[in-house]
Every structure is written in structure tokens, then in C-alpha cells.
Image (tube, rainbow, N blue to C red; front, side, top):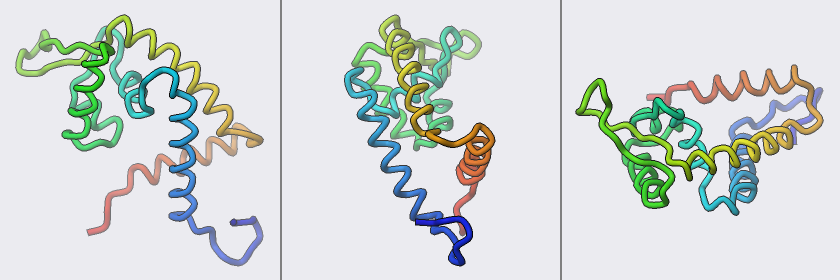
Length: 146
């Protein structure tokens, strides 16, 4: 564990890996009774009420491969959370829209995620959380080394 003032640098990759696995487990447990995965909740948040989103937009927003997003969207459609409709501006594009069930699950999940975010913040100040968020955004934007 890294402690400020220690000579050795924190093992960031190791800590990020541990934190990601634990955060995923906490999220899945906190959402389990809604019968949706954390990734599906992410998709419900990306698919804006009214405007909807394409599968590609969902994939990009969640950092998923197009094929993984397509499979997830199929499961969500079978579960009655979303429907597909042609884009009114371009019929070649299919947009995903939330059903009334999808909107209800989205609202419940939003409250749960707020609680989970408060739990993640723990004893840290708003300034500390802002630095962590900035770091995570930086990491998320990194391109793989060639």
C-alpha cells in the first residue's frame, strides 16, 4: 500500500486493477436486484430520453468494442429496456430509445449510483475527488503504446 512520504512510488497499474475489480463488484452488488449489469446501467445513462443513441455511440461512451455493445443492446432489447427505431434524419442509422421500463430502471439506478459514488468518495474532500477524477480521465484517454 502506498503511503505519502514513502520513498517508493505507488504501483499505479496494480492499484488501478485492484480498484477496478472492487468497484465493479460493489456496483454489481448494488444493482443486482434491478436485474441489469453495471454496463447495462451505463448504457441506460448514455441513451438519452427522447434523443436516444446509436449502438456506436453507446460503445464509444462505455469504451466497448462495437460487437460487445451490440450483444449487450440485444440483451437489453429482449429485457424490454430499449427499442430500436430508424433515425428520423438518416434512415440508415438505427437509434436506441428507452422504454418505460428502461426509464424506470434508469431512475432507480441513478439513485443507486449516487449512493455508490458517495461511498467511493468516503472520507475524501471534494478537492481530493476532483484530483482523482482528473487522474482517471487522463488514464481513460491514454492511447495504447505501439
